[in-house]
Length: 295
Image 1: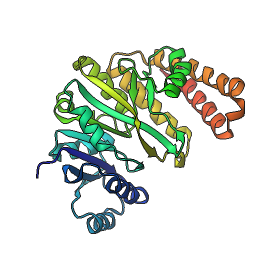
Image 2 (image 1 turned 135 degrees about the horizontal axis):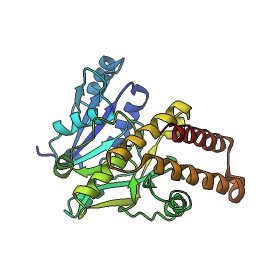
Image 3 (image 1 turned 120 degrees about the vertical axis):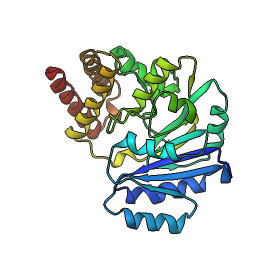
């Protein structure tokens, strides 16, 4: 039976997430048998056990085992290549669906003017997370106050902003035409790179933000470390350089934007600030300054 949408979930030592993720997909599947589910594993330590469990619970799922961990982009590309549907949906294993979303995504991307769409992510019920962001080389004021206002009022401009890559749908044919995921990017920043390539090669295509489609992204469980921030920023720098965007300009504007954000949290929203927020801002600013001095 021909499928309308292929859902790709990449795992790497994701046993604590994948089962609840899949359960939420089946619970909120609003397109029935038109949904194809492909789990790609990047050589997890306990892959064999995970495979047996998934197959016993969901025998209709296709499971593909990579013999090595080639990174986020490479693993997802394996799943996309195997997919049989014209619409691809990328989902991280720490995503939890809380409402039906697939029918709306299909409707949006069956309109040929649209190439990619995504919804609004929450880290907990009634606690929105970052779903839209300004370009890394955007002016500092846009990355700080502009981001806060756009997120608050769900205002998205695909010409200058990008959607979270944790959960999104994209037309397969057009994605193939712009080169799928860049496998040189091992992890972090893939969505920014994809948005830049869409604008460059298919400027007539639209990227749609659907804030009424909501989902959970369990990001609060991640530990914010210097290494984690460093890897994210280093990936951002490499992406900027590949698109002929000045890395120093990006870092300089990020530093200014973060200082503005610190001011907003400290002075204007002091009652809502938390030790975790303050620590994360300070750590990120320190890493930004270190990187700026090295390039």
